[in-house]
Length: 143
Image (cartoon, rainbow, N blue to C red; front, top):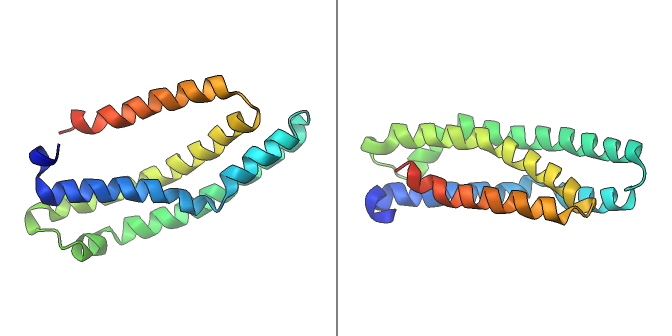
């Protein structure tokens, strides 16, 4: 993949993966808290619903803040990365697409923590196996 993309675009691709990986910082520990609270309240559906809805709303606000920063400063970030004129527009657009994926990623992490808190590990492992395979294969398909 690195040979096909070249060093500049492969570097941007690697940074994009790192941004998504580090996006979990913006969950502020909510996924771990949801796991704990859902496990404690496993017999109380009303409290679980409050926990899940509160965590979802908070993560939406936090992730939107991070996404908006990345979206609106994508051009500046591309300049900071010293991207050549040839790829500048593509990298800037890619950063905007990446910004849109951050809220989806973090909301998914919150909702997966529900499965973990409810100790539904079989379903959680199936989901993680499928998404892991898709994430590993999909970059190669788009080259």
